[in-house]
Amino acid sequence: MKVVAANLDLLSRQEAYTNLHAIGNAAIARLREVFRRRKVKAMVQGFGPMFQIYFTDRDAIHDYRDYCTYVDTARYSKFVHRLLERGIYMTPSNGLHWIISTAHTEADVAALGDATDQACADIS
Image (cartoon, rainbow, N blue to C red; front, side, top):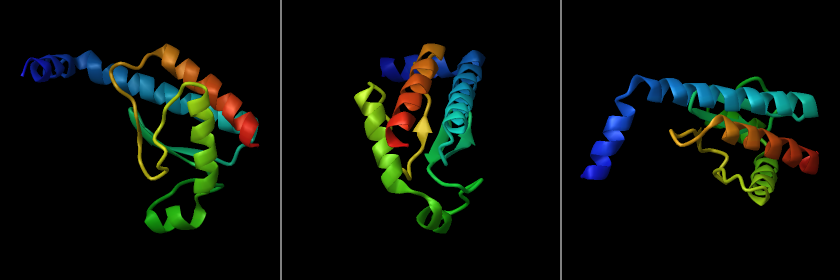
């Protein structure tokens, strides 16, 4: 019960959600910047602490039909394996969200950006 109480105390602070959204939005911006600069056909969809990456030339994925038709899941798999080789673990399932936690920092965003840059170079 102490763990639950400590977690609720942490999340009841206003800055917890402000920080979650700030770190998440920074991660989204960094990922988009890397994909744009590397000319990788990928999009980051979501906001704040919850988002997804799709390797596609579409502007948005609206539903499962879009996902099955337009998303390159094989390329996503290669991408997340390249991230794992660089110490970044992301869900291997392209259908699941990436989620920022209260433990993530700006340094984590920088590490994700650097690893994404290197992974994009590998899969291009």
